[in-house]
Image 1 (tube, helix red, strand yellow):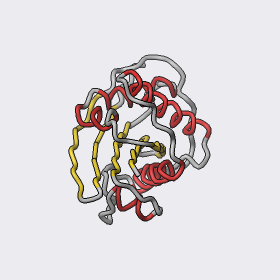
Image 2 (tube, one colour):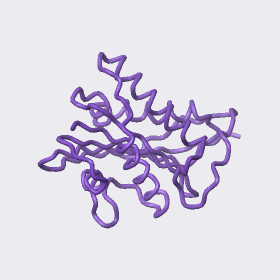
Image 3 (spheres, helix red, strand yellow):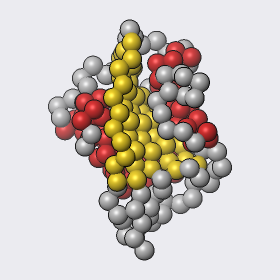
Image 4 (cartoon, one colour):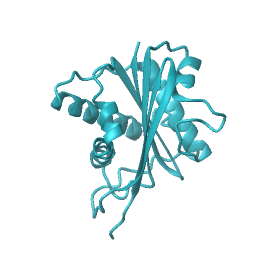
Length: 188
């Protein structure tokens, strides 16, 4: 059976003195036949809640982003646990409340969410992605498709390859509405 999935990607740069946002639309993922499903991650409202499958997917996406940075002459970004918490929180919120935006329905920006978590920064950025389904993809294939989508979008690519970043965090949540990816970047 041939199943197509779609991934939507958005990008936002948040500066200490303001917010600059640039977004792109839906990018179709190539059809995929066969392969493992990657398992049902269960859950009704989203979040990874320690789910081993989602933690593995987070690690793979982080690795693939860092691979892109190194291939382009930049240092790999260390994972910041606090920034990861903010990223997971936003993915969980989007999955639970079925929206796909940088701002929450209450109007909280990525920078607002970081500040609420007690994170100080001079520069903060965010890439988000959503896919409707695993479409038979393994974790490796899904992570590759998400990072490829970001790298094929000029704004996302620029965000990933920004030399000023010092650390990053990536969080994923899955619900009946799809799989939500948030990667936050920080310069303290």
